[in-house]
Length: 426
Image 1 (spheres, rainbow, N blue to C red):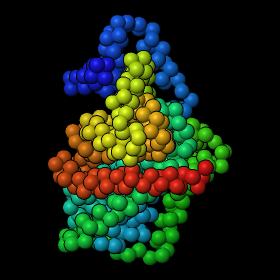
Image 2 (cartoon, rainbow, N blue to C red):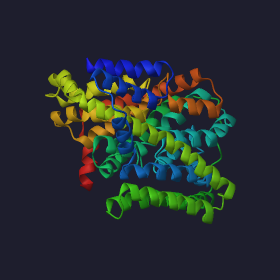
Image 3 (cartoon, helix red, strand yellow):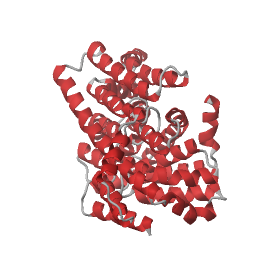
Image 4 (cartoon, helix red, strand yellow):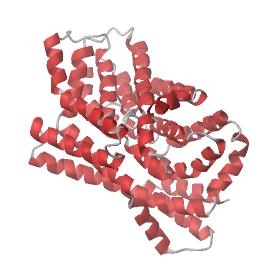
C-alpha cells in the first residue's frame, strides 16, 4: 500500500507538470500524511543533510571542469585530433564522433554536456559531407551517454552517495564497460554506413598534420591520465579529483590555449552554478523521499515482493534491468538513481550481488533511458543543436539503443566483464 501511494503521488505530480524535485518532495509529504504525521522540521533537516555531503562537492567541480573544457577549446581540439586520424575512412566522421565521445567522457562526466559539444562541432561537418542526419544525430546521441560511464562520472558520484558505496571503485569499474560501449557504437555504425553512396570522404592527412593535432590536444589528453592515476594511486579522493580537474581545465583554457577570457569565464561560472543548483536541489529533495521510504519500510516490502528472485542473481538483475528500462523512458537519470538506489540496495545485498557491479549496470541502463522518448534528455539536446526532427533522431538512435541493451544483457549473464577489470585494481 505504501509503495502504491508513493508511486501514485510521484507519477501524478510529474504528470501534472511539476519538476521532478518538487514531485519527489510532495510524494514524501504524501507518505508523511499516510503515516499520520507531518513535521516540517524533518523535511528541512533531511534536505540540509542531503546536500551537506563531502562527496557531492565533486559534482559542481566536475561540472565546472566540463564547462571550462568546452569553452576553453579542449573539446574542439580533441575532435580535430580524432578527425585527422580517421576522417578519411568511409564513414570516418562517425568514427570521429565515437572517438571523441570516449575522449570527452574521460573529461566531463556528463552525457548532456558531451552530446551538446559533439553535436555543435560535428553536425555541420557531417551535413556538409553528405551523411544522413537521422543516422548521424542518433550516433552522436548514443555516443553522448558514454560520458557518465567512463570516469570521472557525475552519475557515479551521485550513485555512490545514494547507495553508500565507494565512488573510486565505481570509477574504476566503469572504464571497461565504457570502452565496450564505444566498440558497440563502432560495430553498429560500420553496419549502417557500409552501403551508403552519399558520403564524401575527407582527404587523408599527412603524418605532420596528425602529429600537430595530437600535440594541440595533448593538454586535454593528459587530464584523464592525471585523474585515473591520482585515484588509483591514492593521491586524491574523487572530490579532490574534481578540484584538480576544474583547476586544470581553467588553467589550460586561460593560460595555455588563451580561449577563456573574462567574459567567457563569467559565462562558465554562471552555467556551472545553474546546473549545480538543479542537481543539488534534486539531491536535497530526494533525501526527504529516501528518509520517508525507509521510515515506511518500502525496501523491506520490495524485498518481500522480489524474494523469489533473490536466489537467482541473474534473473533478479534481468528483472531490475527491465524495471530501469521502463522507468528510464519517463524519468531522468539523476532522480532515478536517487529514488531507486537506496530502495534496491538491500535487495541486491540479500542476493549477494556485488554493489559496485550493480552500480555500473544501473547507470548504464539509466543512461540508455536518456535516449528514449518521451523524456530523452540527450535526444532533445541533439535535436535542438542539430535542428533535426525528433522523429528522425529517434529512428537513428534506435539501433544503438538495441545494441546497448544486448551489451547489458551480456554483462548480466557474464558479470566478470565488469568485475574482472575491477579485481585487477583491487
